[in-house]
Length: 122
Image 1 (cartoon, rainbow, N blue to C red):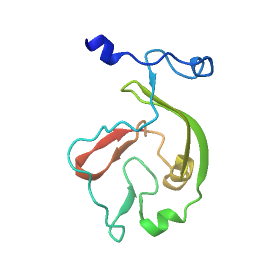
Image 2 (tube, one colour):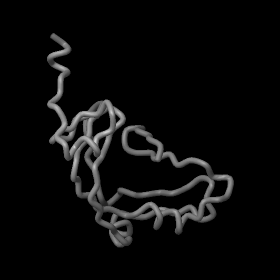
Image 3 (cartoon, one colour):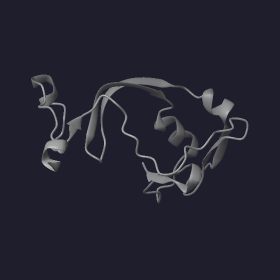
């Protein structure tokens, strides 16, 4: 019975070259969140860069919104095995952040810190 529940539709010819082995295509965003979704007060929100950088800095929400933005069209493949095709994203390219922060030669990794103690690597 579990095999039947786990079965996924076969990939179309167009999808076969775009979907990594072991992934399945979904049309929805799977919910991968633990706990409540935090509310955000944009008046106190900040984006802070610190650590092994020449120029640590903090942006307010308004300052962050003034940074150059870029739109991209991509497929996204999650480590939890789902794929969404033909996604449109817009945001601040990491290159702009790195140019401002100027990582030191000894810097090797980036860790993002978010609400409720969540962290992820970049």
